[in-house]
Length: 159
Ligand SMILES: Cc1cc2nc3c(=O)[nH]c(=O)nc-3n(C[C@H](O)[C@H](O)[C@H](O)COP(=O)(O)O)c2cc1C
Image 1 (tube, helix red, strand yellow):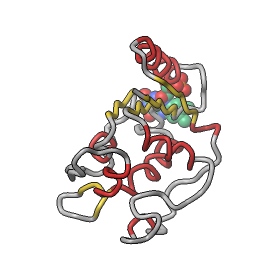
Image 2: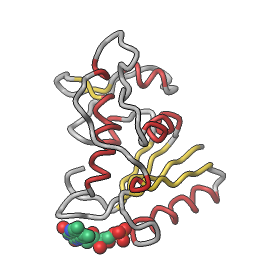
Image 3: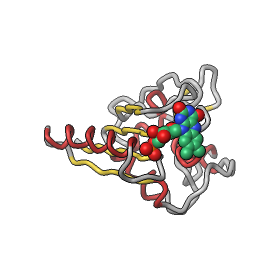
Image 4: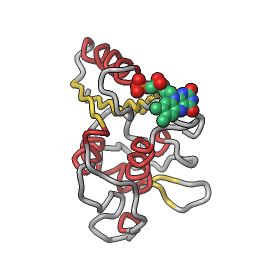
């Protein structure tokens, strides 16, 4: 079991980080391999709307084509069994860095279908047993990433 916790706070030892560390400690005590990512350590931007991730048959279909400080984290999420997302509430929602992270994490795997679905290729690529499409509402990481168990800590109603 590989679990990644993502800290959307600029502070590495305050409320959000404390909750995330406690969650990871619990997971590690049950044998999980854990990693804590501090988004504010990374140089990256939100989605550029290049649509390379939407080009069927393209090398980036279902994955973010932008290469920057977030790329290793996005790659690791594909290997993870669970993601724990933590963010302080800033002006009624998650922090800007968490929002940018979510744009890059979620947009590549969403399809413009009604209801919105997730790219089956992504599911298959990352170990999905059946490639099953799952319904996904707007910006719901726990629905967009069917291969992983996604838990949200301290986030706002936006999610
Ligand atoms: C720029 C900014 C905006 C904030 N906006 C809100 C808010 O809208 N609602 C709220 O309850 N707290 C708000 N807070 C307080 C933080 O959410 C709160 O202090 C949080 O616990 C900080 O998390 P951290 O210790 O992990 O950094 C804001 C803090 C900052 C710095």
